[in-house]
Length: 269
Image (cartoon, rainbow, N blue to C red; front, top):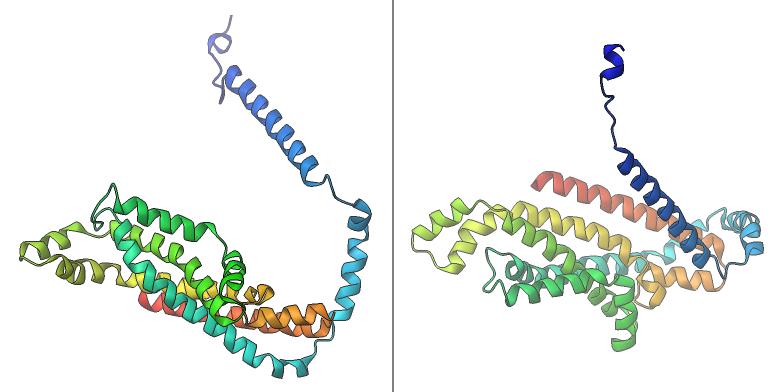
C-alpha cells in the first residue's frame, strides 16, 4: 500500500455540508418557482407576447421629439427644482435635531428619546416620496406645497440616519478636551462635534438634493406639480412626441444635478 493511499484527501466541504447545500439549493429553486407562479397567476400571456410590437409602435410615435414643446416645460422644470430644493431644506431642518437625538453619544436618553428618534427615521425612510405626495394631495390639495412637504418628509429619515452615524463616529478626545475647559453642552456641540461632522453634513445634504431632483420629477403624476404633472397631461392625450421631450428634459436635469452634486461633494469631502 502506497503512502498516497494512506494520506487523507482534503475536501472543501464535508459530505454532510454538501448534502445540506444541495437541500438548500433545492428549496431555493422551489421557493422561486412558487413565487413565480403567484406573480404570474393573473398574467395574460397574449399581451406579453404582443408587448414587443406595442413597444415598437409607441417608439415610432415618440420620434421625432416635439422640440418646440420645450418652451412649455421651463416653468414646470423650475417648479421641479423648487420642490427638490425647498423639500431638501425642509427635511434637513428636521433631520438635524433628530440625528442628535438618535446618536448614542448626544441623545439625552438612550432608552426613551433615542428609540423615538429612530422610529421617526425608520418611518420616514419606509414610505416612498410618491406615497407621501399621494397622501398630502388628499390632505392639503394638489400643488407644489404637497410636493415640497412630501420630499421633506422623505428626506428626514435619509439625512438623519447618515448624520447620526457620523455623529457616533466622531473623535471623542476632542469632545473631552472641550468639556475639560468647562464648556456647556451647547458649546461642546458647537466647538467639538459640529466641526467634525460638517463635511459629512454637506456631502449628505447635496447627495439628498441630487436624489430629490429625480424623485420630484414624478410627483406630478399624483398632482404634486412639476414636470410630472406635464408628463401626466401628455400621456392622457397620447402626445408621444411631447412625452419624449419631457424625458429628454428630465434626463438633462438629472445629469446636471449629478454633476453639481459630485463637484460639491468633492469640494467639501
